[in-house]
Length: 64
Image (spheres, rainbow, N blue to C red):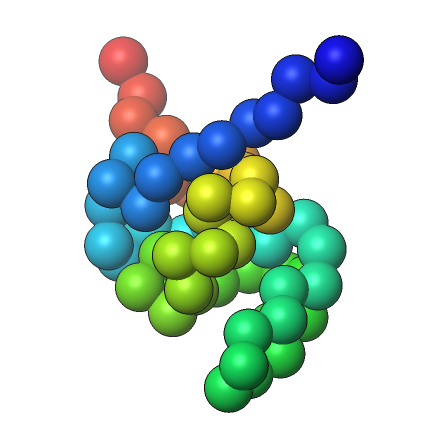
């Protein structure tokens, strides 16, 4: 049996940028794959496992 990756919106900050990996259809809107703020996506995108964290751009990484 394949493992399903389920996430919750609560695992992300509301203003965090995430990647929608594939098309997400809701009764009111169609979301194309791409980069979105967490607050812009429906809960279904997270529970269906369609979202992953975006890599941190090098200029935003903290240097030590």
